[in-house]
Image: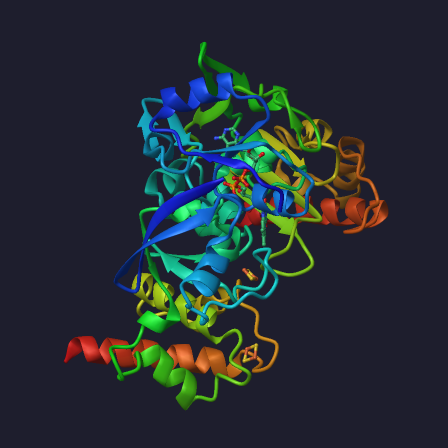
Length: 160
Length: 282
Ligand SMILES: Cc1cc2nc3c(=O)[nH]c(=O)nc-3n(C[C@H](O)[C@H](O)[C@H](O)COP(=O)(O)OP(=O)(O)OC[C@H]3O[C@@H](n4cnc5c(N)ncnc54)[C@H](O)[C@@H]3O)c2cc1C
Ligand code: FES
Ligand code: FES
């Protein structure tokens, strides 16, 4: 069965025809071209497909596109301010927290939601926050450093 | 994935009449269990009823002596709720340990209950809270005690035309609760076993106790012998051997791909001991 759904992705509104069985992940990637959304496990285990939907970090592989009808979505493509990278993106590059980059969009979006709720996290809180995002290359140390540095930068940007 | 028809009801009443009308229909909440089962073709419903937008089912409220949690409350909603932390902290301890942040943002307490896995983490705490489940259908509401609800792995007495509306239990503000789970790692891992213990302690003596075990039987098991052993005793006077004997009488674990029977028995005993040690510190 087909449905027409409305999505707002990174501020742009779309009407898309989708079959009810399609995942939000596949519609974002294959129909709308947001290929920063990655498919790893397809089962909620790796976090590569993480997006922000109505303010919450979720696994887009575990949501039907029809379920997302009417929602607002942020993908990695919408995080920078034009050519100015978001502090989280900058610090991931700065600290060497990216190798192959497959986990990076999900890792960064998870961090984005987390730092909104907890702008001044401890290392243990960071570890819990990214526990749903697997990285097979970097080894987490650099990722945690990048998140710590991003939190500091975002805080000082706010204070200015 | 097999094709299905997706239906989004306008309100709870509408949802109930669709459930009555359609055969072969499944309720979709957070989808973190059901969509995996549909993908793997373990379930192949013709129709999916998406109830996620029924906001009336996502309320956590104070009802004189009771706390009532809407079935669509996500694990994260429960973690964020002051009402729950003041009156049922043990439930929060379980929700914090579920899956990952992404799963907790989407997965609901109602889905965790109805999926009826013996390893579902909210169940042992809900048993110790002596929860009641409120089910609604076109013909009205009924209330069922959680201890009478489950029939086996994946099975409960809910009828195909019923929706779990909410969960309610008495406030337990002075009780001390502990939930411990053992899994192969901290995040994203199904419990090999879990223990919930809820106690009223007075000067080091256990005045009231409720214990429930997860993943060591076909459904959640109540720790009758363990409770009988510790009730009205000074915590410091109970020996490890006594605890171990009582726990082994209470549980009937199996060996499966996640763990063996012997290991489950040994570790369950240790978790109960740790909970009692924590109580002594409190
Ligand atoms: C990666 C991963 C990790 C996980 N980790 C854990 C964990 O650590 N601990 C744990 O306990 N679980 C875990 N789970 C399982 C799952 O996330 C939880 O059981 C969750 O609470 C299910 O809720 P849901 O809203 O997603 O349910 P759904 O998948 O939407 O539904 C589950 C079942 O309940 C029925 N249902 C849902 N709501 C209602 C209702 N209101 N009335 C009637 N029927 C209803 C559905 O028809 C379906 O049969 C994990 C799952 C994944 C994918
Ligand atoms: S692809 Fe969605 S969690 Fe792995
Ligand atoms: S950088 Fe390769 S998976 Fe994380």
